[in-house]
Image (cartoon, rainbow, N blue to C red; front, side):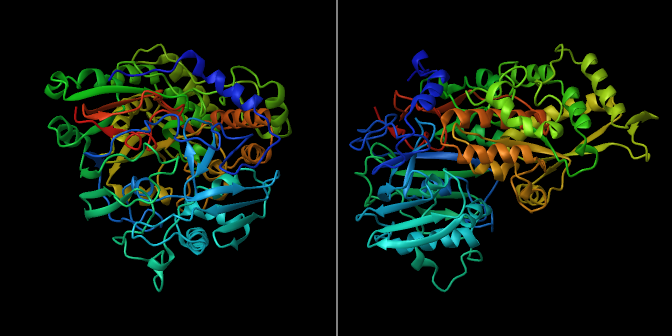
Length: 608
């Protein structure tokens, strides 16, 4: 099957038109809900537009994960579970369509109701909804799940619970959630919380439960067997309650899905070449062209597929910990960005095939525009003008080198910035006024695919920094140490990846909010403290205007990018998937392209 690319009619500009022209008058819908206006699919839809509703069921697929795992509970802070667990084994009241910026349709819930101001939301459960053990999903289960995850669960669930005023049963199969803050996204977030079985945890502390105990869910897949640290096998529940729900039709088609764990990427790739694994995602464009010509590709047993997308680039690179005194100065951070010879590194590691990330929302209509801020973006930023870093209002762009290994011009600018920040070279070492040398350490995880590439980039980067008198070394640690040190912010620089969507919302406060500066384990790895950023996020969450939402997001993108918190590397505007020829996918590709929602969820096995 050949790669399918979007037509011009589905270009990013169409997304702007969709947001800008949708009516904002209606804020409720019996079968679904959208962030702005009404969801695209009518109440009588029979399947999501990017699935094959008649996809056959059957077959086994095997995927490889790097590292290890010591837990099968993805909902607590305890242990390290396979990341696929919460997507494959659990459901929520509503499900997201990945062909719209932010629309939800009923899964466990058959209907949703909310007022225009979205100060509350009410859900009615489907009478037929069942957990994988056959017991009914009840309102009591839903309320318990929300409270337990909000008070004892993983940190990602805590902030939502703090915004709930009341949660109460309103009927045999209905419940209402009222909110204590103005936030239009909360009605949608409420529909996406996982629902677990209350009875399983009676007499047990959920937060301190045995990590090998698998929470009971209601999704199409359940864990059949596992060997901690090595493998997990999921089986499709033959009695799955929701096979006829429109949102589920044509999805979750494989009878069995297995995860195998590998110590490093080389071993994983060799396993795929040998036919042990069914598919791999390749992130290195040079390797995609160079190394995927092995025997199984040549004889047609393996197919190379490229899946495009229209989602924001997000941010990938080296994040700088501003909790460190030296890195708290934006001039030092800019100097480190200047010294990172992207053009040379990209050419060396990827053959220059991948474009650089230029901002957090680049590659989408939500990204900051070139040049000075204008119009509504400028108006939103104006009250914070005195505190914004240079480039936020007047325009900021990443430095570009001449592509040579020496990178002389950029290093000269870096040296000037460091001198302005009070750092000078003494006996070959960059020191401050107190005689302290700038010695930086990069925290990376051993065996992680993205960080293996970053390790090579850091080796090149270190030689450039040495010419500035800066010592840069790498701490390569196992997954457990890596997580612990990131949670404690025990690093100067570390690998950073934030995937962003076309519907940014409450998660932005988790990523960039000041509450995460001191709280252990927050997503705010850079330690940024920006009232302007928080004001833009709040405006994004409270406005009922699509135009205002776009303006606030573009303003946030300016604040983040000009904050110089991350040294960006390349973006992935398309996914590269090598897979068994028996694995098929629909011809219609959603605007979000590939992801956990796509492969394997909407793929199927075709023996012919």
